[in-house]
Length: 117
Image 1: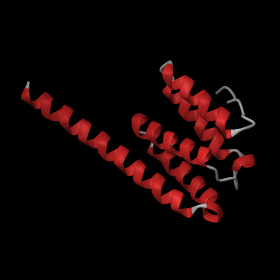
Image 2: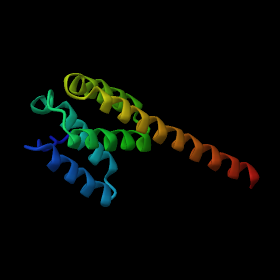
Image 3: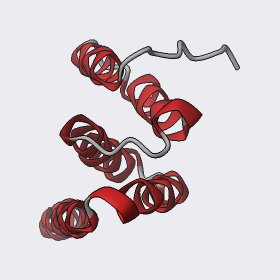
């Protein structure tokens, strides 16, 4: 596996991930965000950017069906939030649930339409 670039600022990682998503490299985008969440430098540094990274991270996990990666990210995020903003964890988890439920609904709709054929 090639080494992921480490970013000096979380904003740069988020921007890079967005660029990767635009060119269809969703797994690379997820890897970038995951590496950022794991970065020691940002460990106790909750910001709204970190929150946005986490939301995007979880959306990509749902899209790619990477539940273990999602769980790891959530554990990491819980630690980040604990001191600074525990309410953010709740917000992120709610968004994650919504995205997952939407994915399930889409899959079910697809299955139902396949049955009709």
